[in-house]
Length: 254
Image (cartoon, rainbow, N blue to C red; front, side, top):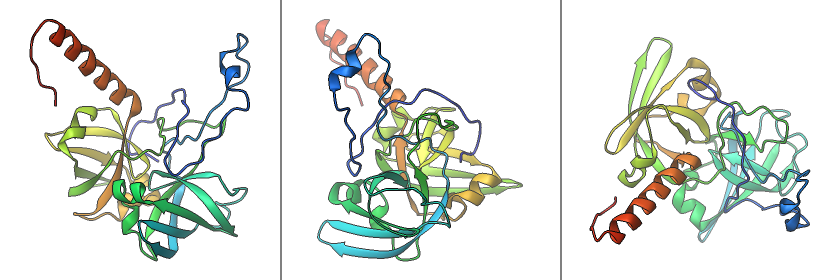
């Protein structure tokens, strides 16, 4: 679910730290001339399928096991080892009890995401992994969280809401006006961008289906940078840096 125009684009494979990579039996098949088989790893679209609730949290050192109850029927057909985006973070199902799914969260994920702050009763956004042939209504989302941002301000206007997020400055170069970004797993279009912040505009449907309708100032949200934008920015910086060094010009890149 997103707050503005939706897009459809091809979906690459991806891997998340908490996800199980499914490798082709014969890796060389990807280089076959006929290229008849398409192998896609875990992926999401940023179209949140609803909200679920945390029903149990088991704490251990640098580790959490979280049990989440999904709406009736939303966990149908899921298998142990399947990938589910929880607040945009790709997690692996470790146990199934009806509509309640269990997930293990390791130290790096606790550090980089807002999952460490989940408590019993906390609502979360969820999206099950897309399948070949599914409609891609948002943008390519891998479930790899780059950082967290803080809700800096909320502006209410008739039939919509504008939220401004404060983000670590080093990530701002990857956030472009009218570009893609995933906030707690929600595919959104960027509004304005500042030195250490960006804004998004949300329609009532987005507020109804996702947790952004519940967010308050100071709340932490997960941010996934759009992968193609990051690749282009990093490649251009690396290429320009190499050229400048070759010419003997010193230049610092943020």
